[in-house]
Length: 518
Image 1: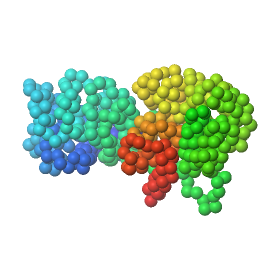
Image 2 (image 1 turned 180 degrees about the vertical axis):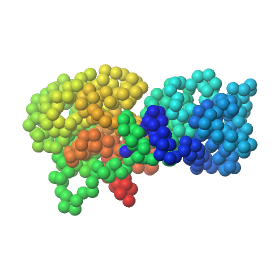
Image 3 (image 1 turned 120 degrees about the horizontal axis):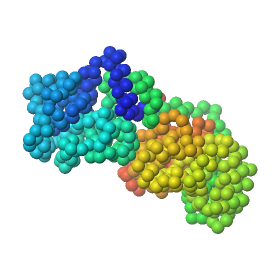
Image 4 (image 1 turned 30 degrees about the vertical axis):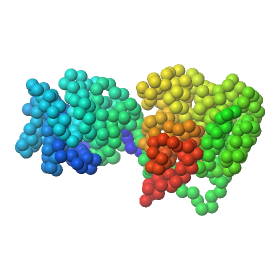
């Protein structure tokens, strides 16, 4: 898995690479070369560009990039936040190299310099942002903030070196004025701002480029990394090829407790997701209307009837579930159940059965403000809330959850001793210990009714097949997002039917595993 690093981890990795024999000036030159290669690959039409450089090593990257852009035939106007004579170390070397090639560097602190920057931006095809990198620890003010405002007002595409200036490498917060990049070229490893909202929305397309810091160094220096990103190879390591003599009993028996009057579709979609993810046997437990809907829409699933009370399962359903669920390898609770008192009582009784469980939708709402109730379970629990459900569990507003998604998902995982999945842009997965995972797949197309029901079924299928809870969760989220991406190539960013998403999961799985194993 790819480590997502913060500022201190990146400093340690830089130092380790230098101790290992890679000069710091070489790292800077490699960073500048990567920056220019990605800039010209994305914007081959650029003939005039503006490069804005900060006072530190990020500014040195920009000075080197300006030289390389000039060598590639691009006219560059270069501006620096500090007097170029004040650069030190590797940045000073790159100032001298740029100066030797006749590149004029305008200090932005000089009279009329900001107006000149604005004029040059107006005539440029694009800009390179090399103001601040991983060392920034506070919001921009003063001249730096005015430069960022000028970049925004120009409306030309911006390519950022390592991270958009104004963001922190250590969080997804936006502490003040920040560059909105079209492309961000991340050096060596992604940073937290690249993957956590709202900051990630300012990063545009993020490209991670090697600059001479090995993966072994990054792994060693990020052993306490708070976040990692799964890759296709990780998926291949978890989802082993099926043997030729396999039979359905090898892939788990999954129970799905779902649906109520008017919400039978949630049960159908969860079951469809589970079957498309490869579950061996799927049985939906529900009231008569839910059973009828499943039988009509999905003959591959089996059904069991539960007693009904006011259009939802009755409290007495808990006893039947407690007797029946021990015959299954895992269970999904919640899609479309409704959160009545009777449903709550039935769920509390059923969750006493010692099998892995996925809690979604109304199974989460039944425990609003009480996630610690799951600690008593003697089997793994995977919770899959969206921000509103997460807020109700933790007694927070959805806005508070979204303000620090990482803190929220880690808090739930620890409070409930479960694997927590916080759905949304950059879905996060956390266990009570170890790094959280951020899902790299997905598309706005997934913001469709029933998408979460499908996901709960996929997680349940992988739990029933014997995957560890954390692996079942991130693998399901990864495939769910990848299936959405596959459909987005045909549908665009709107109009998904959730059943299409379920049906796209096998092909997404096949493509990813073939790529990883090739």
